[in-house]
Length: 425
Image 1 (cartoon, helix red, strand yellow):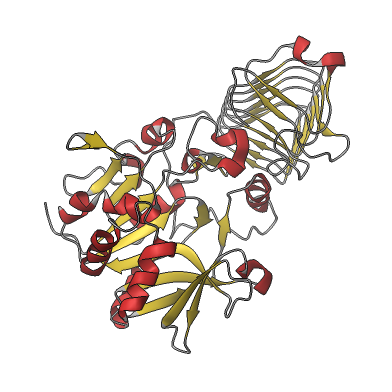
Image 2 (cartoon, helix red, strand yellow):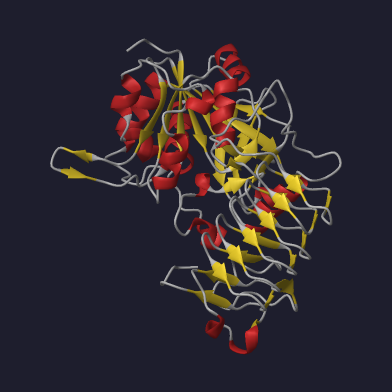
């Protein structure tokens, strides 16, 4: 294979349990965002826009949806004879196989893949953040400072710093210490989970750490090991838009930012586009009595009711007389007539019957998962069917082809759940 200066390794195997039923049957990077996109589209597009044309995507938890979406990388111009995108799942080595047991362990298990391209540098990325970044500028910084490791960082508040990995650096941003969730942080430079390593150094560190820590992790093991060696590690400051969408509230908030008059995150930038796998859909249609305000509405939607401050994926139908507010409706959903939906997230291909009211009542945390569903947002899982005529409160969770008999008195009070087929919340 042709030698590459830098290749990208995307860590896409996480479950994302804090997103509840949105990740019950798919990995977090495969969750829709911003209407037609999926979360993984953002780091993938950043790589392509930065000139990184050889990428390994490391998958593990519920990978089918992610594999189908990325495919051979055509939307990102990654269907190449040399390089391109490769999906890397755990596999049998010798007589046995093993799961990826840590972020660094996942890279360790794919040393052979990386060696095939003999890169000078390796870019390691998480896949659960929304941002645009030029990794080539970060590589230039890495070279200029003669680094073996460069860690992208953002300045955060002191309160946030106690919940994050903090890079302590000198006046020139040379890192001298890493602290994981410090009680009394010495600085406010939080690691973004974006790393550039000189491959020779990283390779040696991975091999050395593997027999010591089976669950080898960059923050816990590899970064401290490199720091102890005394080699150059620098913090690369990033001060543009970056959001972690790992919780229901953060996911909802970040989508809602897109419908502001002047959104903080620009999806319409011709110089730094976000690419995705998409089908050929007809234009959006709005009926004679419809009303749409401050919303992001994708192709193929049919709007016969009212949509206010919402993000709608492709092929969503909103029936006559229905009013949908401050909600995220993913592709292929059908909302019946005369529904009232407020602050809900509805995953793809779900159906809501006529006359359903959803999102009212008291803000009671979910009885089964109060640490996941507690901010007033009701979540409907993928391919769920909700019968007509129901009243559903806040912080509710519904999954499966439900029937009216599952809702005593035609109601699901705030904090309630209706789960079919034993899917975990």
